Image (cartoon, rainbow, N blue to C red; front, top):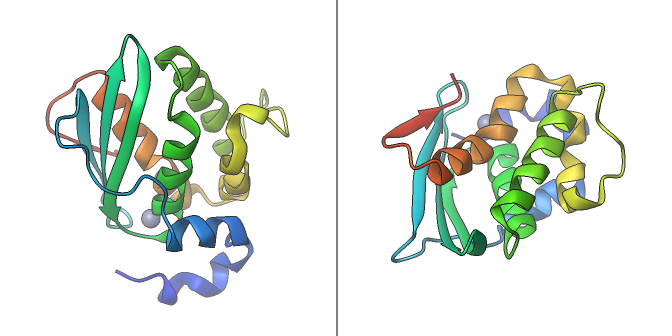
Amino acid sequence: MTDYDKKSDLDELYQDIIIEHNQNPQNYGDIPNPTHNAEGFNPFCGDNIEVYLLVDNDKITDIKFSGSGCAISQASASMMTDQLKNMSLEQAKKVFQEFHAMITNDTGFIEESPILGDLQSLAGVSAYPARIKCAILGWHTLNSAIEDKKGTVTTE
Ligand code: ZN
């Protein structure tokens, strides 16, 4: 599936930083013996993401992802891995909460959240409900991996 058919109405979302992460995803690949992993699927867009973690003493010592799908799903997963690597699970949870608040435009969201880093470039997605599922897919998959749920998680 390509993004070309949808590109015209999404132009304003495609900031340079999103394009960069989509073209050169960070931490892309797998971890041979992960302590946690899970697979996620967004049926509305056809995105899929697999997340691999190495957790040692509640710290994420390594995190990788693989998958395919639209630029937003892949860029969001790339930024997520970049941001969470070497964080504690507790810190990672805080980043997820901030990201979730930003992407769903909860009133509690504080602009310029330093723990979000590049993820802030996805703030515009909150105006496009269908794209929120794309942006959050990697995170649902991450949570599923950490909670050690079996099977494939979907955005529904
Ligand atoms: Zn998507």
